[in-house]
Length: 228
Image 1 (cartoon, rainbow, N blue to C red):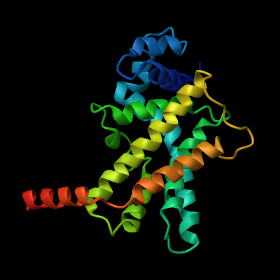
Image 2 (cartoon, one colour):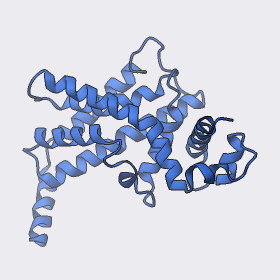
Image 3 (cartoon, one colour):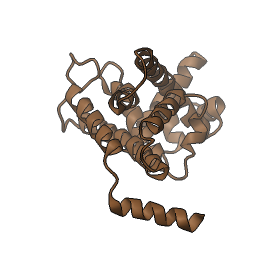
Image 4 (spheres, rainbow, N blue to C red):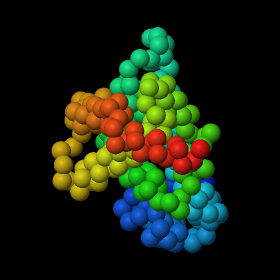
């Protein structure tokens, strides 16, 4: 078998097993078997470590997702100054949501990403930073500018919450679709599940721009005073 083909079989097998069973519970031997590799050293030969295998999964999926996100942001900024948060959130959410379209077969990746994002033992930033995250970095910068009237501490927390929210929401949708327990993506939708995605973008946009309560402002003031 061609080495490139073998490598891709291992990547897809790992992606599926990580999505279904969890990243820490899947052995490298199990991935080898799922990829149809009789040579038990195949995975170690192609990747060396579990971290390198995860990076290969990110490269396989995230490179295209990043390109799509960058293209959306380029088109948005070409129209003039960005004054609304919603199109920025759309550029953050839609490229990953598109992975759930049947033709792309990226549901396992979305579920894997949600697990990697939640696992404190995985340095997700280290695996993707300056490789596949240029689009996400731009969305964060645009959000910071659009939310400049809010305390910076609040803005950073909200952005982190937004990322976790949309990734896990899409992962939950992918899981339900895989189990046949929710409506499939409409085949005619360019973004897959148009209503679901549009509502998700609305929800995150509203959370990012929500008024800051007196309680939160008081806590920010207290925290600033303690660290001054």
